[in-house]
Length: 460
View 1 (cartoon, rainbow, N blue to C red):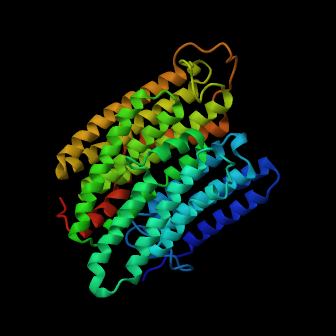
View 2: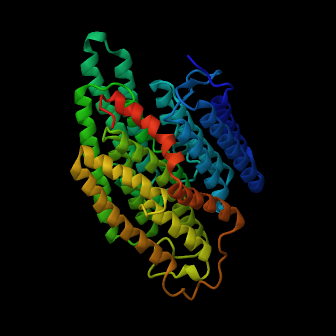
View 3: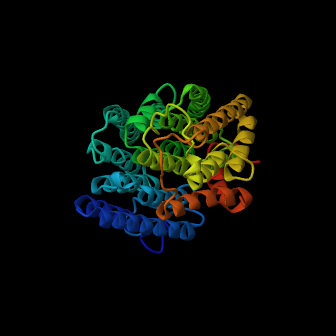
């Protein structure tokens, strides 16, 4: 058993926990925001160090052996810590109360525990903890909370049942039990990711719930992580058939939500449909069971996280500054007053739908070829869903930034410095990753080959 040189994982988790407690108890909003930002930055630096130290193979934390870093989880841990920093820094003042910042740090803490879990018990504990800030109502009382909490808890129960079955089954019944357990794991993923026809709770959470915490929860992509973890171990043949079904359902979700978006005009719901559709690409790619498709899915995981973070933060910033953004009666024409926000929105959006020259193009190209190799109909569905998502994105951009400026909008600030730098970081990552994709693809390809070999598929 090999170990990290220092307890980076434990330190990162402890820092987030301490930051959440300090934020919850603080009575000074500005000081709370600074503390939360510093904690998020420290978590990112520790996670980034894990990527460098872990390199290849599987390294356990020397302090808590239930935590480990490997080729699959080290990069997402660092990336998610960076996203947490973006959300904390960009959060408008009305969203940056002590309880709200504590809730976001707790979501990040729980997600990092799930990523770093060395066993299913620890992973399940992290899975449960991600729903805790919503159950405790740290983001206030929202109309959508009961529905969201119900689906999150149902997902946790399904995963817990799967773990219990695997740990209490006799050896002679192991094959049958593993199939039942894998079925429950897929159910947990479907409930958590909002896979069709259970995507309604995700739309409700985006539309009526706290937008930034919901986006932070969504961008953990723990459903994709759970399937990837399952694939990294030898699965029975029947489980591989279940993966084929999951892949079909995921691409159906991507296609249906992209078409559904054509009839939607409210920015939050359009964003939710875009995000759910693109997240379906990730599940479909992981379930292709070949290295090219899996690499594309793991790469798209990063693209969706970075691009959707930029889009969602911009929409929330505009909601705070302009009345009527939540349900616009006509085009708002805000590019006149906020050209920087319009530019950042367009860059993130075009990367999300795979514009050539961005990292999204590289991810979708790998996804498309991997899907064609295993399931040609999935590859074709990906193209159709991408086309509809592109239409939806341009429609959303037009509603927010094009047209004649409403008379009641006299003056609004463009991107503030604390908003400009995080958004610029997202845009630079998406563009530079597309121009020089070799390093980022290398981060993900090793984990993809490990998963392919575990499934017994011959590498190409």
